[in-house]
Image (cartoon, rainbow, N blue to C red; front, side, top):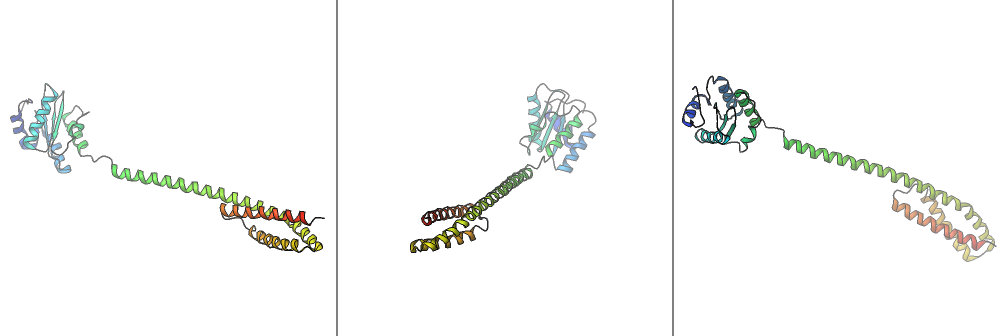
Length: 239
C-alpha cells in the first residue's frame, strides 16, 4: 500500500490483517516488532503508520477504531502526532510521549516501555521499611547501650561516695563506743548497740555498687539517717 490516510479505516484494517502492520513501503521491520511483542510479551500489537494527520484527535479516533475491530493494543504513528489505544492498558497514552522519530524505533520503545515491569516497588517498599526499622532499632539499641553505660558510671560514682561517707563514721563509732562504756548510761548503751547493728549492715550494703537508681536512693537515705544518729550519739556522749 503506497499511501494511507487516517480516514481510510477499512483499507488500514485490511492491511493489518496479514502481519499486524499498516504502513506504506517495507513493513518487514515493523512486522518483526509486532511478532516479537507477541512472542516475548504476549502483547497483541497493531502498528499503523500514516504519512499525514490533521490533528491528534484524528489519530486517536483511528486508534480506537482499530482497537474496536482487532482488539489488543494499537499504536498509530505520523510525522506530527502519535496515538494509542488498548484493551489491556488503561494508561497506554502515558507511553507515547517522547517516542523517537523512526517508526521502527518508536514501536520498539513503545513495546519496551509498555511491557517493562518497572522497578519492583513492592519489594523496594518492603526493603525500605525493613531498613528504616533496622536503622531505628539500631539507633534505639545504641541509645540504650549509651544510657546503660552512663547509668552504670553514675551508680559506680554513687557507690564510691556512699562507701567514703560510711568509712568516715568508723572513727566516730569507735569513739562513741568508748565513751558510752564509761558513762554507764543504759539508754545510751541501748541506742549505741542499735546504731552499731545498723552501721555494720550499711557497711555490708555499700561494699558493692547499687544495681539501679532505686536501690541507690534507698541506700543513700539509710546512710544519711545513720549519719544523723551517729552525730546525735556523738553529742550525747561528750562530757
